[in-house]
Amino acid sequence: MHRNAIIAIFLGLISLGPGSRFGAAHAEVVELANGGQLTASPNHDSKRVTVDQVELDVEQYGSIVVPRDQIKRIESPQVTEDEYFDHASKFADTAEDQWKLAQWCKSQGLDLCFHRHAARVLELDPEFADARYALGYQRRSGRWVSQDEIMRDRGYIRHGGRWTTVQEIALDAARAQRRANQVEWAQYLKRWRQRLGKEHGPTILINFDQVSDPDAVPGLIQLLGRENNRELAYRYLETLGRIESSQGRTFLMENAIFQNDPNFRHRCQQEVLSFKHPKMVEFYVVFLNHYDRNIVNRAAVMLAKLDYPTAIAPLANALHTRHLTDIAARGTYFHTTQAPTPRFDIVGPKASFRRMSLSEFFARTNNVYGTEVLANPGVHRALVELCDGEDFGYDPNPWKAWYKKAYAPKSPPIRLSRDL
Image (cartoon, rainbow, N blue to C red; front, side, top):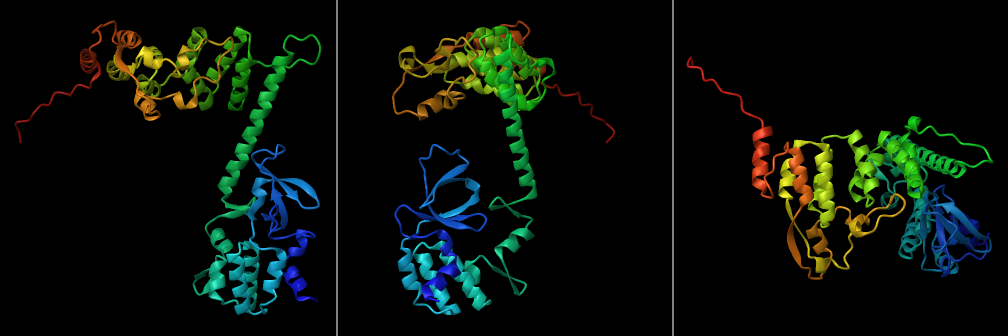
């Protein structure tokens, strides 16, 4: 048999298909997680695939779509197949020559060939140290241990082309199941709304008083954003407030200040109060430093409604806050100046502006803006409510002193014994 044919069979290159070339400008060598390989070109502009998939154009066979986690690596060789065969034919089937050939393959970007020639070195000489180290072996207790053995000893298993733990596999499965449940809920809710009030077709019944599955939350939020009927929208908000879900509760807490429609904003506030907790003070205090003065005063409203005295000192510090002047603010993004939408706005402010302070706003621009210190009536009203009707105006110090007197822990009297 011709020497080139022997090398081709040894490397498994016959499986690449006729006419395959290492150095073809449009083709690369794709190694799959299951150990297979093929010559193909990834289509990076494909419209057929999702983020978890890759479309490969396989020469003479057309295109295929494979899961991204099934691709171990993609190799872009610097030489053609013929050049590889010409060079490889100069080396004998000895450990020393195969190692030299392996190193040449590595220098030419032929990683798959490098690993195969290095593996051949170990078949010829199991104690060839350089090849052992290159293939990930380590010397332990007088014997060579492969990377696979090391990973298994550490408690990892091979799954989906990567090393992982049993716990991570279980978490991945749980996340996948949760995503499937969320999609199922979203479709179910959408079909229910589409068929609501229709005379023909099967009826889907949903008792929102019984909906408690956290996986229903994304679907409810989507439904809320499409709803034209206000009473139904309020029903969705009540359901979100009742479900034990961090996603749903964060959504309601944010919209208690971000929602520009005052009626929707008030409904969100009511739902937040149904599951209120002292830690919510920390959540809303952050917004007292917001670059948008309207957000500052809306946050103060929520702090007053929560009725926790720990909010008094932060509110006192926010009686006056610095903001852009009216002239400087023109042309700047302020979510609260936008007109309310007919439907519940489930998008809200731009993500990067949600918690932005004035200093963070300035850090993102080279423009010079005028600022001024302004009094916040909403903050003042919140303090009056929290301090049992007391009114110390806009000076923060009396408010803090009142809080200290009313709520600071008092030291117990100390009685000194004369019998020492």
